[in-house]
Image 1 (cartoon, rainbow, N blue to C red):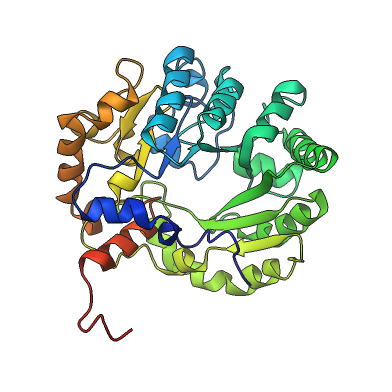
Image 2: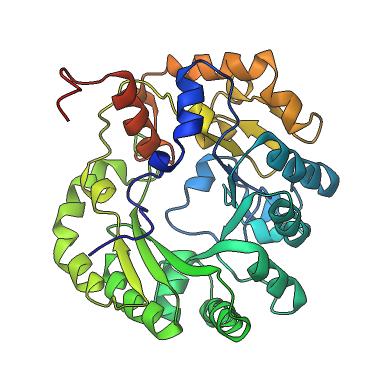
Length: 361
């Protein structure tokens, strides 16, 4: 099946100006940023990678990116030339009471805004409508299709609430004729693969634009118990293809086949994609990768957006020091599987390491 959103690849081909500037050695603004807004979560999903990034669940609910620095950052991102920001991260963005103003401020600054959330706390009044009016897409993280499986996988009895919030988005989109894309995301594990076909059918029933099924990221030492089981993903092919068959003209079931089947392997030897994609943690700190929210945090923290403006951090010596430090990491031994920068790194590595006879197109 086709993937019109290119979720299993990258969109670097549509940004040749930024790539060319980077190749000339210029300091560039990132094309995209993944930005957390809180350090806590109201769920405890069985596959939570945020648990490895200082997501402290209930304990962290009161720790979030403060209002004024957050809105300053949104305005600075637009000024710098950041083209998109996704409010996703190690925890739940809707725990931040300033999330709706951040979405509007970012969009008004010229940044394409998006949000990934479990959706349980989404406002169904004017704030929720404002969000949908200013977001390019909203994605609900859900890996279960029944109350029983939702409780098993997400440790919550709020399945009905999740469905209600998804319906609010699809209904509001239709009533207001909004352009926002509404999607679902399933994190596929050997423990929940039985839910992939029922969830594909649920997404179709709810009227969302897509369901994307992605691999479960894990560290190479298998802290979540998934990396050592990636070989089992090949046995899921029949169920995944059955889920794809639920697609129709206005609804896509997108399977990230490349990442589901690559066993967490990389075809590049360096992480070169940092200048194109930066990460913000839920307490307002800036990093080259989400894994450093906890691991070697002091060595890889670019700065603190609650103390220093984004424009200052981008212009700082510290920023370039971190970019260079990341290049020296052994990506095969130390990086987690199928990181967010993975597809960008594949593309950049090819640009920097061309094959012979490139003129024979």
